[in-house]
Length: 173
Image 1 (cartoon, rainbow, N blue to C red):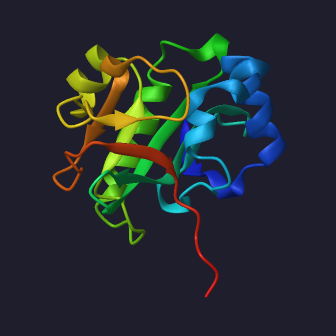
Image 2 (cartoon, rainbow, N blue to C red):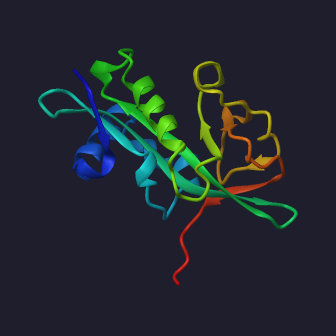
């Protein structure tokens, strides 16, 4: 039996160890890390999967980012990912369950940008099962290399503008 819990109740070191196992320690050099640099996960949309003994099997993290449109508007978004599953448990539906739990939480999420999701991932998978498309992302620029076909978004409020994607860091009051 797998239990889905808020990511906040899981030891951050265990999460980092799982991410290293799933993606390798070089994961921190990827463009996705630059996009969300300096931000903290959106707690309402970040979850972990544990087995009956409490062992960490998978995680999903979501991050506050923004699209700075060339026309001057700044559009809040939430970046989905990484979705990580322990290598020995991959292909068992854990990643899908985490995505479904996160998407269910979007309805009640009070954080800005929760209605505008984006990710970098396989369009055949994320499109087919979760409704993500590249329809509005063609003009987006990222702070590093990426495959444009893998830049996906979901939500009625996702901006269809040319612009640069980057972290959305909270301003001090």
